[in-house]
Amino acid sequence: MLKSRLVDGRKVDRLLAGLARLGLSPNSWTALALAVAIWGFLALVGRQLLLGFLLFLLSGFLDVVDGAVARTAGQTSAAGAFLDGVLDRYVEALLILGLLFYIGPEAEFIIPIGAWAGILIFGAVMTSFVRAYADHRGLVKDQEVLAKNMGGLLERGERLILIYAGMMGALLFGDGWLLGAIVLAAFLSNLTAVQRIALAMKYGKGG
Image (cartoon, helix red, strand yellow):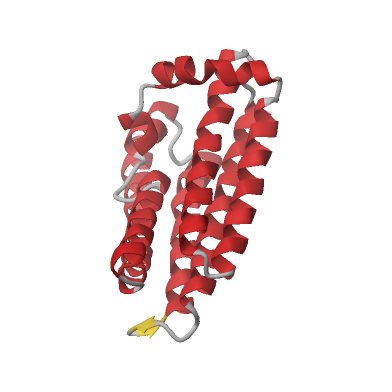
């Protein structure tokens, strides 16, 4: 993932270690990230793009905090990682749906924006599903292969950066930038899912 490639987890843990002293459990930080994302969604529904943008950035920061607190406090668990991953998908869906409300149903690029939002959500879900299903079915048995080789062009981190860039473009230059980012993310997300299917079949043959 982008986060693991660009961020030294140990340095982040040291920087955020003080937050563990607040006494909140990792799952509480995860829930807080979701609550802030819901606030961001409501801001976008109310056409407050800047506020929504800042709130979703804060939600992303809190998503980093929960993992750092878990590692610093020695509270990492499979259940916590599972909850974090599931709520991450809800946060992403809230972002996409919020932007759909912000832009409005009349916006379109070849097809209506609602269709692009649906294609984007489907691609985001399939990107995660393909990897999980390859593991579940035992097609790719090597966990190291799953971790290192089942990536793709546009994982969750890259999707969010692309969408956030579109939001910044909309704030500075107009909503066309946001529409373009959503269309591009929709296309690349599904291309990434197809790429992962091909990788699963490739590495599965050797498994």
